[in-house]
Length: 460
Ligand SMILES: C[S@@+](CC[C@H](N)C(=O)[O-])C[C@H]1O[C@@H](n2cnc3c(N)ncnc32)[C@H](O)[C@@H]1O
Figure 1 (cartoon, helix red, strand yellow):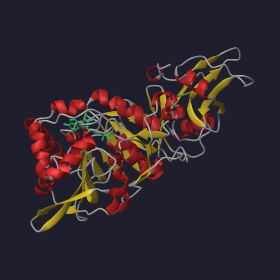
Figure 2 (figure 1 turned 90 degrees about the horizontal axis):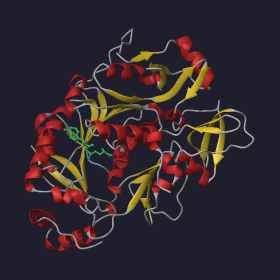
Figure 3 (figure 1 turned 60 degrees about the vertical axis):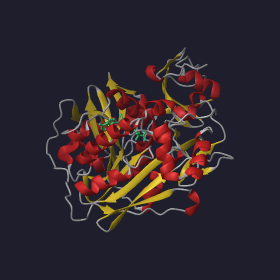
Figure 4 (figure 1 turned 120 degrees about the horizontal axis):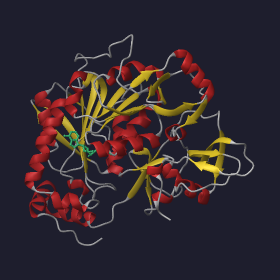
């Protein structure tokens, strides 16, 4: 990579953080290409990438030797992995270190495009429930797409301003705020972040972070955790935010177990004789982009807000499906276990029954973009499966499957015709290396390709 021209005020700031010698190493690191890393979806695959180095703080994270064309890898579209910068994968180490409850209800307040939400969704698996929220409409759409591909079905995607969660004080076991920031840690990956940078922009970001945290601090229940992260080095957006949160809310410090060889720098903020901790990732000390993260614990005796039980769930669009209708649907689809079923317009959705009460309660306050797994529709007694169902981890034993080779899989993802030989007529779940890609309908003399039009790949 070519020489990097850093803003002067940023250089001065980083020299004051690192000293002249270490600053030179920092600049050299910025002039190198960033490493490409992926995090595997263990709910879908046990695949072990060959000859790839592990991300030290995440057992599902791997560094790739070079950047492949993800667009031309069907497993990428099947949601078998997420392309994520390595430092962000540290959240896995935090969850392990604090022994975060896997049967909890979590909120990712600034979630798009979904890197950290997919990590939280994996951690919770079928035992927990995640609200992945994004305030910006177009970004909420990308988040929804990534959550659908990840396919665990334990996530409610919402599009709300943080203040819309105001009625949910004390509701969540864990709240993650991966705040919009000045992006100093992304300068080598995203040149726009560098051109937008200025001390005034940092001040603007810090003021916005205060507004967000002023809300978010209240959403955590007694005994729960608040995680705050940024992709910037700036103390105004990091250590100062620790001070702000502790000045606004009663929170206890949390120290995370680190391995000294990882190169993560622990930062200590002393407030009224109590030490709080932050963790900073510099690109010259480890293989990852710039990142900062801190964790707080809400005292056990703080507010715990349980979802109120309602006899009749009422929502302008989402309707509960009665038991008889649900049982018929389960037989038609071949789902083995009873769960929560809802309908929206003419489509059926699945929600984990252990979190139905939470889901229904949350629907009262939030603007819902997606939830659970969209299964499909019934038309003239026939079940028409949805793509969301195909790429989910729900069992699909009631359907015929057909494994495509690479060329066929790419043709399928381009929404081209796929001839199927010697298969009965009807719905076929097409897979690549046994990972579901979507649906085809075999009509005998031809097939209909049901891959979503908006998701089709155009690259040849
Ligand atoms: C750093 S990004 C989140 C990245 C995401 N957590 C991930 O891992 O993929 C910050 C997000 O905050 C959103 N955002 C911007 N302004 C916001 C605000 N005032 N309140 C909440 N979120 C905001 C942005 O749209 C952006 O998606």
